[in-house]
Image 1 (cartoon, rainbow, N blue to C red):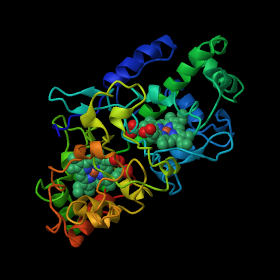
Image 2: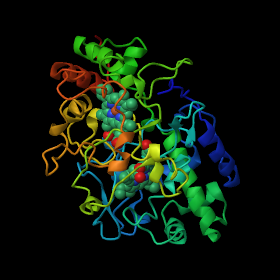
Image 3: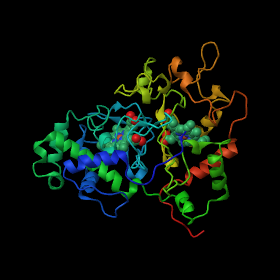
Image 4: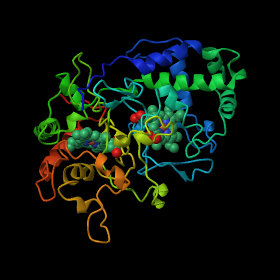
Length: 399
Ligand code: HEC
Ligand code: HEC
């Protein structure tokens, strides 16, 4: 994976969105974390929590990205339920949406590494582009049209504020009103400190204001060690050259071969596969056979607060995730079903022709059955202790 570089300033995606913002009459802001929200962001805050903008009347952004749960769901479902009657299951895990403000649109790095983009498959170019999706997604907020959403906005208690920010006539143009709504949601996620607090114990440690316990320090060393966890290769843990705090993702993609999750209803069809990056609906990467099965590297900040893990929510315990990382190749029978002939159906959530895409060369995946895992059980406990130091809201106790 390429060296991580994500300075804490608004970059390409945000810059492109700022051009729209001006068209929508809002005032663009430079980077940083303002103590008070701009009028557009304050509006975005209201919209983020407004369940009347869903067909069911029961779902808002906050339902699946609860501020009380590191902006992830409160429940442990592998994929959330939505739709007009709240009974349609999505196909992917609902991620934490913190620490995304410096992400860029999807692109290939100079060395060819796929990078950036929003969603597990990078299909949205910006937070605003992303925010246009859930309202019309039949398995989520399930509204019939942009005009229907705009009509609800026009009837919302904050409609007057919306007009003040985006113009008195804004609701006469539903498409424009919808676009401005997505920009308000983007402004909220960029400006509200809750989305990028950098207040974990590890942040305090990096700032020289806290000490890691012996176990946390061992976990950090294992996390970084290229011959042990090698986690930092994709989940960078060091400050950027410019001093930017680490995000624990480099926004690249990888094929991990996560086991198929029977709890995802779409998987009842044996011909259904979620192939991530290269299979995204635009079809722009459809000819990249090598990228089928790749999903975006998620941030590990607040990861100990998650209840389900990986794009398909297969794992429900962090210890299992870490054990999978180091034993996937040394003991595959523990993770994958057996074929009728007794062999292990390794990488069973990928069609056979794409199983060669799975990363089997980088540490900790570079092992053979029977070899010692890259991390022992005790070392996994150490890494877990370190990951627990990535939770926002650490209060130094004077140690
Ligand atoms: C029914 C649950 C649900 C609702 C409602 C919902 N989301 Fe999501 N959100 C998800 C899921 C699932 C994904 C991942 C989907 C994918 O990758 O295809 C996601 C992905 C995202 C991402 C991208 C994360 C990343 O790492 O790239 C952002 C940002 C986001 N949602 C913001 C929002 C906003 C803003 C709203 C309200 C307009 C919203 N979500 C409503 C479930 C939900
Ligand atoms: C080669 C890149 C790479 C390396 C090395 C790597 N990861 Fe990951 N990690 C990923 C990708 C990609 C995903 C998402 C995969 C998916 O959902 O299909 C992920 C997901 C995760 C998740 C699930 C997070 C969530 O919100 O669902 C955890 C936890 C995690 N990694 C921890 C680790 C730890 C600990 C290590 C070191 C032992 C590590 N990773 C090494 C690329 C990597």
